[in-house]
Every structure is written in structure tokens, then in C-alpha cells.
Length: 166
Image (cartoon, rainbow, N blue to C red; front, side, top):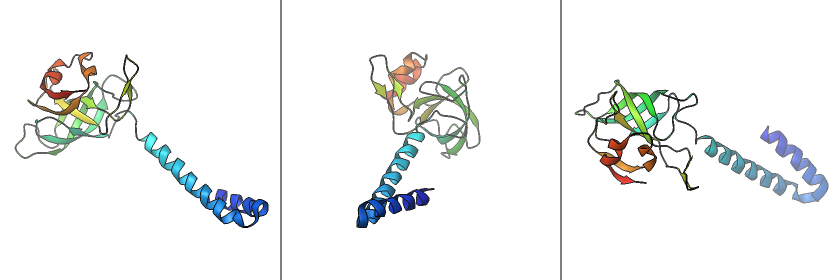
């Protein structure tokens, strides 16, 4: 598709501009590549849905989990939502072992979330804190920044364990 577009543009460029056709098609190709890369970078900022791999930011023993299901919500989970996940990587001496099905609260998401004051919060990675069925954290420490929106979602215990509230 891109090659046919470039060849059509280069034919038009030669007929209209004489010798500038090759440089015109080169410019079109680079601009097409840039827009495609911008499109794909924007596409990665989506909900946390099934099969999304998340980083665990507490000392429960798990390192990475994969989302099985986002509770409450058809599209997926956002900041403060609870998910069901499977542990993919774990530390040898941790409380949580590899393959175990756990609950987790999303504390960092790459998708933007608007705040009441008009600002938006967005993180570089997707991260989760593991909790039990009652919503109490399994670990005793939470690493990295945690948004204050968790207070509205009744996850105050996670906020007390966090070292930095964003």
C-alpha cells in the first residue's frame, strides 16, 4: 500500500516538478513512517485488559503478573480497579508463588486519567499491588508513586504503605 502510494506520488512529482520527484517521494515515505509510528504509540495506551502483563510493585514475592479478568468494567481496568491475575514471575522465597491466581489493584496505568482540577495523570508503566479477597495488601511495602485517586476507590491501606503519593 505504501509503495503504491509512493510510486503514484513519485510519478506525479516527476510530471509536475521535473527532477524533484525522487526527493518528493522520499519525503512522503518518511512522513508516512512518522505518522504510523505516532499512531502505534498512541494505540498502546489502552485499558488494562485480558493478557496484559503488569509489574508488581510490592514485596509480596511476585515480579510480574498477567491479567486474567478485569472486575467491574467491560472494556478493562483503570487506576484503582481490581483485577484477577496469574503470577508469571516470582521470587523464590516470596509469599506468592508462580502460577498462583491472585487479586490485584492497579496503582499505575499508562492510560491517561483526568482529574477534577483539569489535569491528567499518566504513568510510564502498568503496575499492580497484590491484595487478598477482602482488599488488604499482601505485601508490607509499596514501591514507587501511587496516585491519590485510590482514596476514592477505598484503597487507603495501599496509600499508607506507599512511599510517594502522586
